[in-house]
Length: 321
Ligand code: SF4
Ligand code: MG
Image 1 (cartoon, helix red, strand yellow):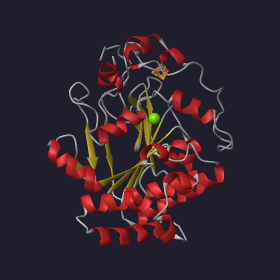
Image 2 (cartoon, rainbow, N blue to C red):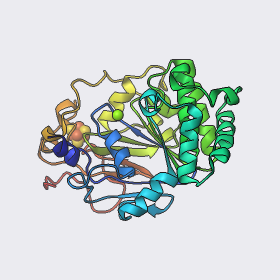
Image 3 (cartoon, rainbow, N blue to C red):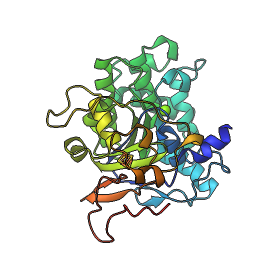
Image 4 (cartoon, protein in one colour):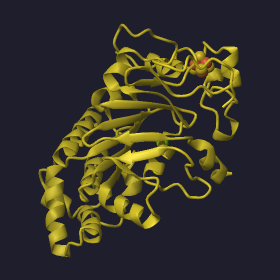
């Protein structure tokens, strides 16, 4: 059952992240965004969870075709992860310093002494004034925000090309959220890396993302630069998400928050996966699933309401895909 779910949960994921870029993957829970991040790390059990088509490029390098051992190297050296609840990813029985040093000894082949010295440095970089003390403390001795800072120090310890942050601020209160987001961006710049930010929170996206992919039902339904997405959201799902956040640009038409919820992967409808929740659904929407097409420069949408930018006519021809 679980395997089946994973197998069908994401479909033709196709994306690239450029150096220095912050790409946000947005959607409600169940939309497939966490699974997509796992497929970036190639952590989805294969088979049956293999992504059969699609492409995931990090800084120009295709990840889906790497061998397992090459991928292990990429994971250890080029990717760092931050999760929603650092308590579950920090080991409660080891000190913070121990956990940073462990990574450095394993991936950077440092001696214990070098690794501890570097751990203190990293803790200072992520904003701990008394880094020498923190290095000897245990996760439970720190507040939620401090634990997230420590997680960021661990994630940065390998000097990663990509920082994957899965709902990094969801468990934190608002002031701390802003500090952690600022810190992530600062670290991205300092370490010349990129960020894949997974979130359901468009406020967070507005704060830090350069480019946004909106996911629904395991598929990308809209992709655009962040400023473009906020000024001209097109997919009814995206517009619904925008309607559920306060203080967004007043020009954006406010919709009622979206009724219903994301169907489980084994019960996606035949046509457009959003059709059961969409106020604009037409007959064709229930028959076939639209493709993700460019409808404006660098703005792609998966919806029959929009005409593709150029060539090949519309997609409202009823062909089943
Ligand atoms: Fe709504 Fe149809 Fe567009 Fe799907 S394709 S989002 S059902 S209008
Ligand atoms: Mg998730």
